Image 1 (cartoon, rainbow, N blue to C red):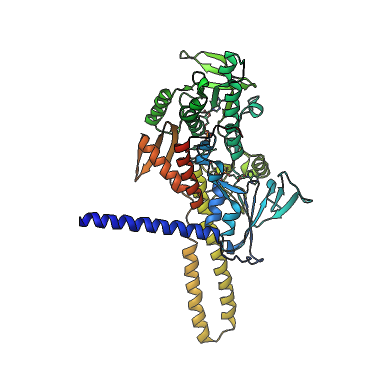
Image 2 (cartoon, protein in one colour):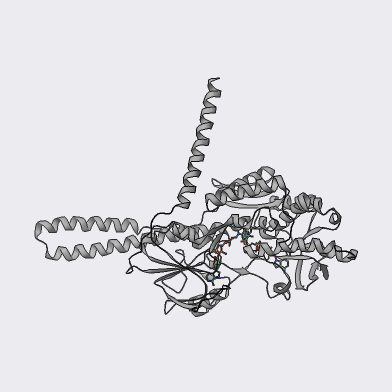
Length: 508
Ligand code: FAD
Ligand code: NAI
């Protein structure tokens, strides 16, 4: 009985503490403290982008040490791991967006934000050129922003490998707008397929959802789409039941190449059970408005070109370098051999420059282009900049002390010398910041039907797991990783809403 009472008390206290924490987070989020202007004589630090790399830098940066300016066409941070869930309405897109204004308003010193795209970086003149590309324009649409220090965190664009028709006919899955477009097109295909007198071939084509690219983006989207069909679509539109199909097309012999062999096999067998067709060794070469042309490798090694009709085509074949990054690379002789992005050293300084750093998908640092890498790079840079600012302050103090020492009497000199020694010790300690080293926490992917796969680092080993328990782990891991308490609450309620009421099948 005593055990029961204590368990009950502990549970009660934990719930109370959790509620108190959430209430405090909500209050703090709604009531930011007064901010002050940083000293105008301090260095100007320009940060490009509001993605994983740049936002993790901003989150950890002591903004009072610099005049910080953020330039990005997207005035919010996007929690990309849950973006595939937005394509079917399992999660509403606003639940995974965090306004950059909220993030910046909670910093100690003010930070300037310009909603604009950086069109060019002149690394020799130390100027960034920015253009307002939004719908509403003022008299000034273009401007120049000088910098002392620059962080490039503009991410990457969608790779199409120059395949004809991709940009015109396929949907990508990188931004909120892409997810909204896919959600609309799924329902458009369904409603058009049920239009009066539609021919059986056309119904089949319209209800054939093709995903190109068997990386984690393609796999997660295919899983989400089949869930949508199984749990909602076929209930509300039963006449599409026999014709709705999801196909995943991959050029390589298997999907999810970054996962262990065991998890690749698990994913492939799980897709088979879910009736998602996987077509490996199938490389798309051409895209038209109604079908894709793919080169299929037969088991005997011979190749044939096949036409695959589709209603919705989602293109998820990885990353390509953004034009602004390509242009910067072309200005720097040390980047002449770089192909996949800005080559950086172990402190993330862009090779061939002194005051430009690069983070995330636009940087080549021998790590995969993932959110995990970008976030750790951003945190590292914040530590580096905070340290650099402290070093500058101590060096200034040392200069003052040396000047004082020159005019001081012998007794005062002794005291000043001690102070100088102490500052030098501090300086040595601070300057001991090591190079960036990435710590891989593991890879996680949702594969549909309430199953996920995980390759998780555990001490010095690795644990590979797949299934429903892994799915619960995936859910709790991503919920805890959401940017803010607000995001966490919204995502949680979206999941509850989808479970109880189903996903919304109206086309906005
Ligand atoms: P991004 O987050 O892409 O941010 C780039 C920023 O730069 C954006 O704000 C953009 O608006 C801005 N920008 C673009 N052009 C300019 C310009 N010219 N001037 C100024 N700003 C500009 N990784 C994982 O580790 N785990 C996952 O589960 C995972 N899931 C994913 C799911 C999807 C659907 C996708 C697409 C990616 C996923 N990733 C995941 C990969 C991860 O999202 C990227 O690696 C990560 O976003 C890279 O961060 P970044 O800061 O380099 O770029
Ligand atoms: P990716 O580069 O991982 O995979 C793209 C796939 O498309 C490759 O397997 C490639 O062989 C295939 N492909 C390329 N051209 C093709 C063609 N013409 N025809 C058929 N197949 C073709 O790309 P993805 O999935 O967009 O991921 C990008 C980055 O984001 C990766 O680093 C990935 O790890 C990360 N990411 C991580 C997630 C996670 O951890 N859950 C989720 C989504 C992305």
